Image (cartoon, rainbow, N blue to C red):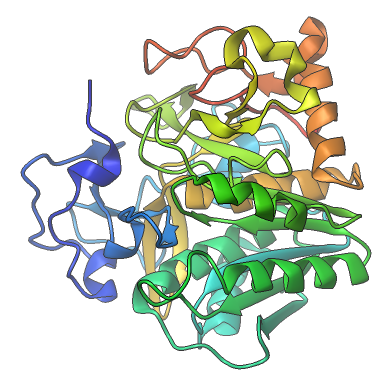
Length: 406
């Protein structure tokens, strides 16, 4: 069994952000490669109890990228939308020729992250322009009213979050809510909870929509006190399930009031055609919460999860996608990519659910109907011995197959 991606890739984390985006001399004793990319995990994505961490890794090609665009092999909004049948695309959905991008979206999407991102607007414009996506109705908001410091390793997180949420639902109003990070020992997860409250208010006041949170911390019993923060009427909450593999708990993704989004991998043949989607052992997170009671929408899987909340609920491709940051194209992965992508897909589906509970009740209701389930989700059954037919800790009910059921 492979070690988790985070554990395996400790070497090289002190590099500057620019070094991550370009091929370099980084080598790890237990090097991880996925789909032709060398995986490098930043320090901000290494879990440390009591500290919020990101859930992304950089995917570095061995050959320098001289294309003037994303590295060859990096999934694009068009290729991912083609595979998930969100748009009509060419047979096999090759990355190079899958150009059609989603056009939906309504209300608002809020992204919650840490640190000031000075080039957010221009980077989002460059990403959108390259792929033929209309510019976003985009707003940066400071969680407590004051601009936070720049946290260099969070910049890639913020870039991928806003770029991919917008790519999936370009008509939605987009907010980036920036928060200051805690200092060690001063707090647990505040001021992120303030940011959640702020983001919830913004989305609700703009007609409803979704919120994506790509960060997390190890579960603790007191997290039960925060579940109420994810219950604003008209808002559906999403969070990354983590990149530490199965059996490693994470919050807020464990909350029953959050759609937990896990990670999968696209497999392509030598011609570049999509062949299958699998789990990657040690990749996307999945667990049965030691604290959260089983929500009613998971009664259908009580024989698997028992009396506790199981996650993820759904999954999306987590390696590797194109992103643009401060003049450079790169490839990126992790469930930090999965969460904003799935949140955007749900927003574009325009089902306009009034709560996360309503959203997940609908998803698990579709899961209970074998015909609808087969039509609306990819059931991820390979990549690890724990990937079973139906719901499992690898990918929940699976990844999207069209907008139906979302």
